Image (tube, rainbow, N blue to C red; front, side, top):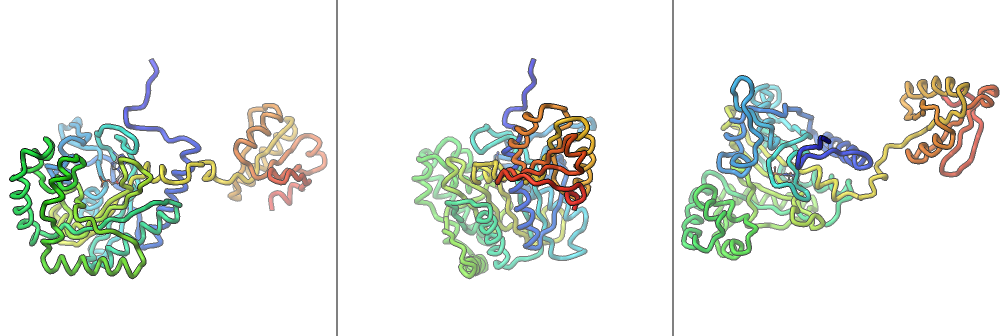
Length: 411
Ligand code: AMP
């Protein structure tokens, strides 16, 4: 029986992997240019980390976690998201005592037991970042700017940035009370899912995709109109700072993020080119999570985006992202092959990207492979070239051939 990969978990091979590599390099450079450093956390954590941070009543914790008991009967989970592990590491390694401002980024696989569809896998990759120790709205605006600029560098089009505020522990409870009251009056008209959410996670109803819910939601009180004065000031300043940086955005009153810990700023970046799963990524401020996980009270803001969806939005001519191959050695006979083997290895020691075929296949098949690998130049080295002490270098674009001495080639 043939063994296949697990449903919703995919291999990424060339030429798609070229696009992944290209995007990952750009993402890392962008984050580093904005002052972030990389953090790598384990893929498996104690289940409790996620139930306590992401929240008991979220979809992630209730139905999507890959949880299992290890040999020691401890409940572990494959990480469904990156923020909780980063916060755990921040606290465990006491990073804030070295520098009260920590700017960390990550990139790696996440796991959620969801129904696989286009743009939704069970193993997917997220890149994300967290800023700890800065409460000012200017930080929020800079994060959004960094992302929009990154997406432009990656060639993405049709982007929109939605922002909102979900209030804080001071103003949210009063608003929630009002919302639940208003929703309860319409309970029988809500979708079945939303009826369940009414008790456990009423904010999620605002995010419902069901048409019947949308109709009701459009008439509900909105958080943005119930912000306390501090939240109001923060939101106004955030918008002004975005304008200063010329970032286009729209205010989406019903933007709620699926995770419990958000406070004040929330934002989402979408693309109309994606279809039903249109979110490129989302983030927000979560000023109380560090404390809730046992660390010092620390303001924070973070974001996570999906790699698969990003790749779907890049130029689909993936060959474009193939790393440049400088030389392909073609060896018509064994005499030339030995010398070519030596020259290729020396060039590689110097950091030049070179390919050579040791299979002893015909010159024609070697040339074909050089073509397929899009070599910039082919270096032909057979017995007759060896006698002359040269390699025949053919430029694959111009088809021009020149004789180059071994010394010059290595230079
Ligand atoms: P979330 O952590 O749910 O806010 O997701 C952040 C981003 O990760 C989303 O906007 C998507 O781009 C991506 N994402 C989330 N879940 C999946 C999934 N199951 N498959 C692929 N991408 C995902």
